[in-house]
Image (cartoon, rainbow, N blue to C red; front, side, top):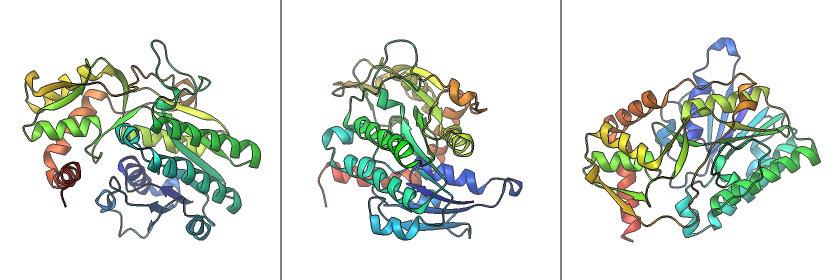
Length: 331
């Protein structure tokens, strides 16, 4: 199979590619083409163990570049689209990059897939397109009600994907997953931000009262779900990737404090984020019917994640230094 994976120098995409190339030979040969724009969260170090693998071709580029896609997409059997701007706080500060990557880019990729006769397409989305839910869990038929610019652009991309399935007959499936965690996540997201701050002896900022509830799943389980949908998902169908842990941000921080050997006074409560969704919860029955079961328990996965950041400071320290200089507007 010739597979095109976009955004694969990022956290989730690189984990997906590692899983693909580690598959036993009996599961069939695979060649992976990676397209990544290498924006601030795209890091070639995430692919460093694979760049010399003859089964991988890396292309630096923008999925909104029609000419690039016309030259790259033909000949691929399937596309998995991880490419996205994904940090809610950044989307609140300015949404233009999110519209470009998540809407314009996805549209260009869908059109190129249609023009080239690509057999399958998986659009990797997010539970945030549903908005917030006070009780119960979202099914795939729940209405889209995004509250942040990030979530709105992902919802727009999902609607485009469904439209290409209905109008052009493109075999596109959509996955919607909760919060991912694991090694190599850019240190602006909650878990790596807090872990690296705590390891450096800094205090950590917790929005509001910390009672917002999130659904957490290990990145490797998410990638297994995406692969299952690629292989067995129905055209035009949405699949919630459920089955992870639901807990408040405050409960999560308490676990991180314990894992890093820090006390509760390491937490600073800060003003809540505008439009902050209170609770996410996914009903994953449709995906379970395809045979999906998460393999990594949250306690085990979180301990392994903290251990990775503790042992790989050379990966994240330069990223935090760059982020600090940008925040301070220093050259």
